[in-house]
Image (cartoon, rainbow, N blue to C red; front, side, top):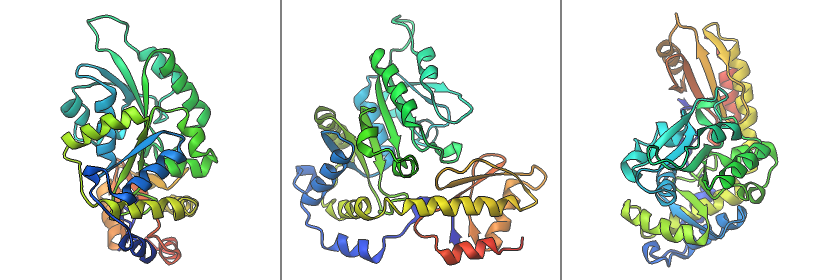
Length: 335
């Protein structure tokens, strides 16, 4: 079975495993795991920030960020399809007591003009708007990325109105690989950034939360409360270091494979539309009479695994586990 369900299904390469085995470790709760500290330094330096914190997952890092940025009763602006709203178990409400205000921009991304129109007045009848979160790349919009000029405009609106900006950068390097923007240039237009290591970068687990020294000091306390204090995290951190040093440039290969898959899917009679493919996510709309269930079953019977992504869409995601042989098999399928 060729697994296109997600870029989270990657397996560590032999080289990554060897790098992990050789890691020097300590106790990260005591903040003396040398490899974890090195990973955090590398991540912070890349994005031009003061500090970073290794977290178990992207959901954890996002939820920690929201908790530190807000107080119970505050409001956060995000897109209605944002991961922090749709796929984190209601965490913003459960963990932080935060009220979401949802942008329904049809592009799948938020824009500076969306934010300006949604900030509440200073009135006790309304929750206090304090935080904006954007997702780059936007998963449910088909992995599309933000133009750095729009990120700068969003950040400017936030600063003009006393808001913080958190970037859910689960696939931020997929975006940067396409735009050519450096992490440091991007980082100057965000207060905090969550960078997932276990998707296209291929590490087995882990996400970096990146921000100021004071923010990370508070984030460490919240991570502890969330049960996220781990011990010899250096083995995972070593995988993250290897990923950052070796697996960023190869993301372009995933994007090229995704475009090839899109062209193949267009030829299927029960595929009515392919959303524009910018990075490693392919969203295909399925004819209502054929149904998403039949589409998934048909592909599975032919050795292709993917996910339903709404009532009329399926999602395929490319990653380092997809070989050229896999691609040729898919392109030559007769369905």
